Length: 77
Image (cartoon, rainbow, N blue to C red; front, side):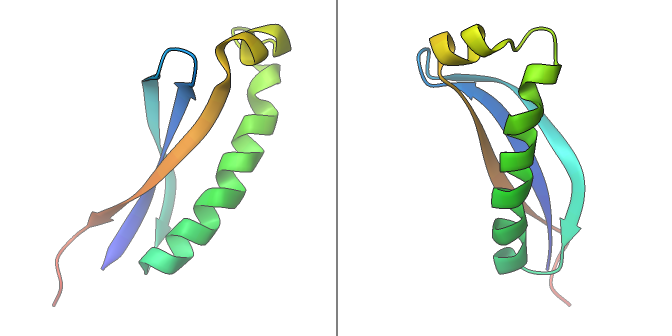
């Protein structure tokens, strides 16, 4: 099985995750995808302030987090 990493930008305040993106990262197993997901989510969170719409005050007010999932693709052979 292959897994792709999908990232979500979410607001804990509203409970909404209005944006998602497929990261482009592909993994050969679930374990590696989860392990990579934590590292990539942390890096993505740290880069949020560089985006104009995610100033630190907004991140604090909305309690913005990065969530992720490892989506299975393909079939077993």
